[in-house]
Length: 500
Ligand code: SF4
Ligand code: SF4
Image (cartoon, rainbow, N blue to C red):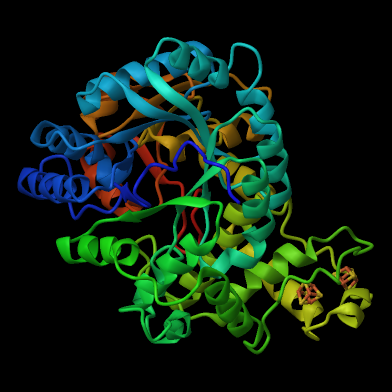
């Protein structure tokens, strides 16, 4: 029998706020429409609100603020604080204050240490005077009720984090596509009595986009493949909340129906049926781990699990890109980084083709060839730490007054690489962002400024540190280029994103 977790009294559908159909901060009619959709969700009983300042092109907070003004329905709001921008307990308390201001609230249910990427970062967050301490202080002051975290770290590291007993809830990426990898993590959370909030239940949108392919997820009693996927995810007893974004009222209704309607298949049977289908896909790595113990220390299991993504169809547009080969490579690298915190140090293939793993592989997979093709892809896509550091060295050269645009979490990650690329150098760094909501706030200890100040600052170089809107931002900065300031895009067309 399952014990109660902090999420148990809540309706299982959580409100994701990252997919509102809003084009930007000036698109007020769309913001109002999204707020009205959110009111419908809240009044239907969905009360878990997953919000962050960058979501829905920086408009999610405003959508929430408007929605909260229009209904007295119960709401359980998250305050998210990322170690990339908030490092101390004071930063954590400032983040609570800022979120309350932006959302027009004076209390939140959950403080989420957002997107902990590794055990090393977990230790930094939970050190004395760090982010975690600030969250605990906020709880003592009655500003928040529970301290939680979200993570894309490797399964073994997540289990280590869960076992510390420091957190009451966790948000994890879990979908039919990674259910085999994540099963031990889910079991661990359940054993620790830590409630799980699931993000990306539809495999980053892949399942509804390739509905015909994934129709095997459906029981005849499910109304749609997406509904079947949501039910599959919720079938694990550790899962208490399933987050789903809302891009339309119809989608909201379908999502609500997955949890309100009669479940046509017992949970254990659903899990068994779906897992059996995955195992029957030709060339699929089942995750049995008989290949463990590579003499070169290669993460064969992780690489082959990521390679599984090449066996599935891909969406036609991902991160604003339409090249099918690039999209397929984004899927593989995203799986490696998000599910296993794996990124190679160098793009040189370490496999010596000894054949040990292939002789043990229960699925008789061509592991050596697969690993070779993956490392070739890592080289081409700049998916290695050395590749990224080299890119920064090439771009920055001798410039020392460097501006980055935009100034959010993506840039915070790039700045962490910059310090590694130039460990001895002193820089004067500036951050600019078009979102007025973050002007004056600090990201990685640097103030985010209004782009109107770019001319006054006169940096040696402006780096467009964004993937999805790289071209758009570069074009917006034409006047700056005309005025003689060097502007460079961080990414080449062949790159995968550096943050997924
Ligand atoms: S063939 Fe390559 S990956 Fe497999 S065990 Fe040998 S070195 Fe490791
Ligand atoms: S032995 Fe084969 S099927 Fe099993 S985890 Fe390794 S690569 Fe995958």
